[in-house]
Image (tube, rainbow, N blue to C red; front, side, top):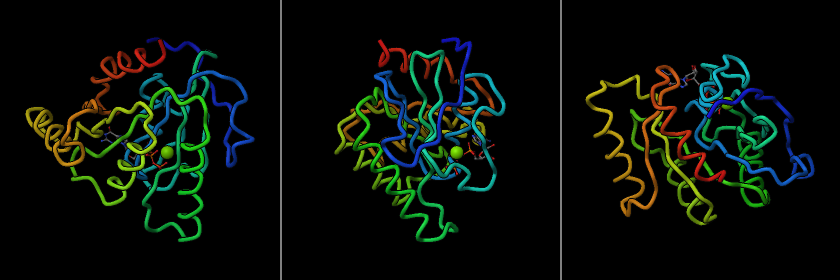
Length: 194
Ligand SMILES: Nc1nc2c(ncn2[C@@H]2O[C@H](COP(=O)(O)OP(=O)(O)OP(=O)(O)O)[C@@H](O)[C@H]2O)c(=O)[nH]1
Ligand SMILES: [Mg+2]
């Protein structure tokens, strides 16, 4: 899919700030620093639409980006950033939970993992929460450029065995650095927008 006009719309901290229309929302979920904001930039071919940082904890609110006024990408703050003040970690957790519970327009959740590491305790909690929410979900194993191309398939399989042994979710590799897996992800997204 070619997005002609990706636009930042609003940073929300409470449901009354969520866009008040029925456009579908594609939601980015994952631990801090896993590459959610970079994912968005990669998918729309922009360097700085969403702000990214090598320091975890860059995104602290719920950012809505309109894609040609036909759907939104929703960039959630990351969880599990241990250097963030406890109070703020709790607040971020509440934003995420409230959004997932209250938004009426979630078409697909894109759950990002780091391809190099086993899921963290927080990843497992998030996985269980997403299963409980029963919203459509796919899993991206990000930073695939950090491992040998020949190991990518096996690593994706291992992560799925670990988190989703029933194998009822789709797991795909991804890399914002290499930009070679974007087509497969767009194909999936398009299914959920149809
Ligand atoms: N090598 C590599 N680095 C990546 C990839 N995706 C993201 N990064 C880097 O990882 C760091 C974090 O990326 P962000 O996109 O800011 O991560 P985030 O998930 O939005 O983080 P929070 O906003 O803190 O939740 C940045 O330094 C990115 O350049 C990738 O696919 N490969
Ligand atoms: Mg971010």
